[in-house]
Image 1 (cartoon, rainbow over the protein chains, first blue to last red):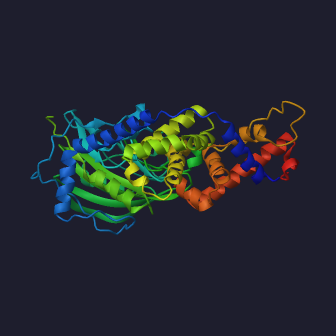
Image 2: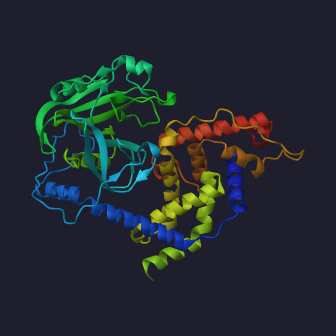
Image 3: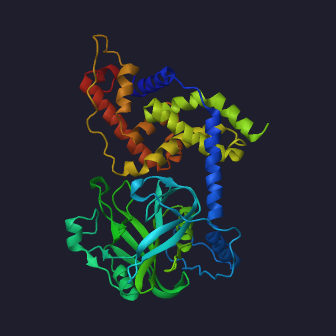
Amino acid sequence: MNLDEQLKAALNLEAEMVQTPIPDTQHVIKGGQDRRRRRNAMWAGGGVAAALVLVAGLFGITQLDGDSDSAPYVTVTPTGSVSPSVTPSEPLTFPGQDAPNREVDPGTYRLAVGQRLDTSSIEADLTVARQGWIGQDLPTFEARNQYGGAGAQQINFLPGKADHCGPVDASWEAARRTAATNVRTLADQFARLPNGTVLQPITDTRAFGRDALHLRMRIHDDCDPAAGTSYIVSESTRGALYIGYKEVSAQDVIVDLLFIDVDGTPVVAFYWHQQGVDPALVAEVTSARDSITFVPATE
Amino acid sequence: MGLDDDFTEFVEARWPALFRLAYLLTASPTAAEDLLQSTLEKAYVKWSRIHTMEHPEAYVRRMLANNLVSNRRRAWRGEQPTEHLPEIDHGSEEMPALDRALLWPLVCALPERQRAVIVLRYYEDLSEHEIAEALGCAPGTVKSQTFSAMKALRRALTATGIGEAVGEA
């Protein structure tokens, strides 16, 4: 008997030997109903963003397609002319570091983005439409072992050429560059990220109801996952933005960035995804990024 | 028959078989129950679609494997394959024959993804392509995981001195 046959026999025997508990079908159904209810509730709660998506649809705005690095950039500009069909509930919060691996339900989540000059918090609401998001301040989306993400961040530092691989340690800190405090210079800094290739140069646009700059980069992430390192695109007071969810060394990641000024503070709203991923994943992270609404200072 | 009745009938009929697969995937009765519970909850949400499939159980079995992968995705990023499987307690003089009691602990000691690949291949009889689809990875990844798992198992068996018993030494 060779090992293949032995394995087959051993697994079948082990499976037969294990004591099978009695199913609690009602518990399963209740769990399923709760999942469905949570999902529906989140959709209702995301009314404002859903309305924006509707506006985008009405105006014929299309999603960026999967892997087309040269696809035209399309921004969704909130018009404020469409009222949500339901009263939005309070935004949710991502579990963050308390449960960084927890998958969150679809819905609208409030992100801590940074701090204004007057030290008040900059926050933004982001809507995720599908299952598959992992809850963090810089949320990550996964589908079938392909990764992407979206969010908004006030940048403090960018990686330096000497060490762009996380974690943030003494070596990374020694190499890092301090982020510019105006939008255009910050965009220029991003355009010079280590291992970066500019796919779409910095252009003026409108986003989130504001003047904005758009930049799309391809980053070659050559950090070693076996050593626990991943490329860090940027660092803020809220943490570092890693783009290296992978199991193999070396990959290319597309990072799409919108630079805006929030009451005098430059902020980057972004999505990223591994190159070559399913177009549905790209659509999901694009939609999430474009759903962002910044919370007014007075709120 | 309503959808809930149909789902209930499915769960009650297929629970033992699904649990056995979940147990082999997780190597733990408790984890198996958790995995199966969460997978069936997800199946319930999609049941209107699943129950029209030609082989709903096959689909749910793939969901089980995929759910395991999804639950572990972040942990796997830093996972290091086990270089040295634990020593096997021969227990008695009657161990030269390779049996479940010897081989199963070795399978349990494999990294989770390697174990999943082995279970799907040798228990579920899935092809490399089908395993890749179930786990959401490339067929090449399945091949390399299988290779690593088999290498680790052979190494452990050789260390116990019974590799020759299975013609693998």
